[in-house]
Image 1 (cartoon, rainbow over the protein chains, first blue to last red):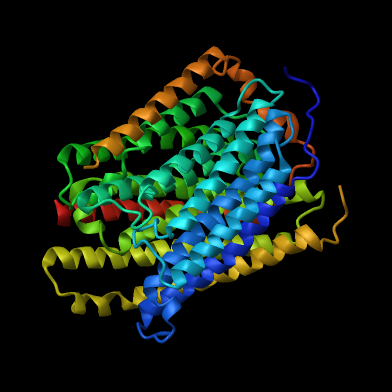
Image 2 (cartoon, each protein chain N blue to C red):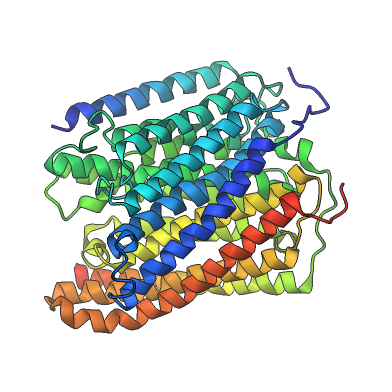
Length: 456
Length: 86
């Protein structure tokens, strides 16, 4: 079944399309984030423009980040490495392009819909029912393309990145439909507490079963290549994969510990949240041992640099998640800006940085030319890193002030002036991330279409 | 009533995972793990490695310092939360 010379795909059109999708929506996501940050500093900022007031711009920002920037960025890398690791061609580039076009249509439709007020009003599940159907179809097409590529493989062994990438899209296709209650088009919701339970079951899994496995797939593929070292242990990586599947699926209720949901469900959520240390540390030990002693080499490569930093962020965001699930800790850290810091660390710090690393790894390979500007990519790296660290520090402090005030029974109007300065700090560091997104888009467009570099 | 949705999803997830696991076992996916470690390297080393630079090393050290500060901050947050929330 195996052959000594790999048969390489010829065009990488799908990977290119998802690269462009990710880089493009990253600019929109950060721009929306900046508008949202502006409202938190000055609530009457752009107050008369209905379609971008805070209640709409925030879900726009979140959905673009999730479905426009990070997921397509990671998928671009997946559409590149799957055929290579399987020694075959992508099952259908045409289908890949169709799925990417449909993907952009649903993100655009979702954004316009939320802007016009068509929202289901559930966190991470705001998109209207017709858009939900488009999301399901887009994921379905990606799942079909990837699984058919696996089916026609010439390499018998599935490398761990294949397991993670396929599981991510397959599980999310299912979880999305259930979490968005698509069998109820009129509301997209159940009634009462059960809806909160199913929403957070989906809300956490859309990160844990989409961004996490896709991010780990990219890291497991790129870091051994950049460091030129074999993976420390493939067996360990598979144990990590299966334990992630077992543990991650039931932890969403840790966002509802202060809500009247059944105690058994809270216990499962807490136990599994703490148990997340197992798959997380398996991945980190495995990948850090793989690159051990090669930090200089990693940092000499722009993709390695982004993705290695992503692994550090992954460590922190997961430690935070496990700690936050403890009821004693959550009394202070939940329902305030601490969670916002946690979310930025996970989505931008871990998954976003890994997606950017994946893009910068594959761009020279799929175009056959070097990256247009290494300097711009380096600049983007530092802007994003400073942005993420800035968000995390500022919002964590603001969150702790809010949590402390809540426990002390202080009135909201007394707390808001205390955290105002941290909102200013957040917007300032957010500006760096927004600039980074535009620099990245320019670099990607130049690399894809107007690259004077010598072909390899 | 959320139990039917939950149970249906959890059971179907469990059954599908079990089927895939059994397929993987029978298909030899857990054999030859030594070769599996090298799979990315077998097809991907077509370019020269990037040259290690002094700035790169400084950047790496800067990241380590940041990570250490992050660890300290996380520990401080945990202690603060336990003191206030416990």
